[in-house]
Length: 386
Image (cartoon, rainbow, N blue to C red):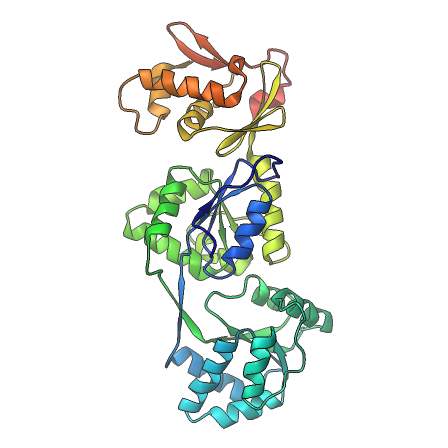
């Protein structure tokens, strides 16, 4: 299982080095986390949902009756337990034989060998299954065949498949979801609370969402804790909300939050989008003959990644808001989290910051006044205006 928080190896830093990304997915979190970490990001994983099988549910019954009344062209089975649960539920409603007969008449696609086994155990035969066990390959096949005007039933498993349904609908398909599980809040809210705390304190640079229910769940938990205003402010200004597709983004957009989404609604393009967006949001300044790029929890000094502790990053951000200008110790003290009233805390954090940066002359001490970034006088104005 993917650890709640993992730090990357930053020796050969990737495009996301120095940034921290929150992952709210319950399913495929390992895959998404690995993709992010491979590109240098630190990952904070906090599943915003848990998936509970439906024993007797009106939504599943309604979807089953809908498919019996109006036949789909294609049925996509995604998990063995989900497919078995669907057939067993239909049998309990007295619709088992009708459902099996209906499935014999359609193009039946299975995601992998376990699903194929469940399909064959029900007396059916799949028409096709990808060797990769990848829903991306299933999607590619459907889109290559053409889905415009076709009715496609997709057996869901908890979180909607990231981008799968959205891509089919974008291709003109009518998609019927078969919900074999229900989304519920996680039993352990600790990771979600830590992600919320990190977001409102600007300890995150981005949060990824692969389903609308996960976004709703995070917003609901923020409301329960009285953090809605703080979370929305963070998502408005400092923490980038990245959604796998437009349907996933709807709960956030309903709160007035602008999101970014890849053109192709899949995890890989979502990560690539972050690789473009986050470095583009970093502050770049020419200081004391060096090129300094200020990222979330680290600084690139002439391309070398220098991790910086949270107190140091707070001071550096305060100085970078007015590069070249003197910032008083009192103002820097206010920027330090939990520093109290002792200005000595500023001096201690500043000493550690200079050590972390590896270039002490980047920050100048102005006696009896405060500190300033040693902005190059002849620097291109575009840096000072960023």
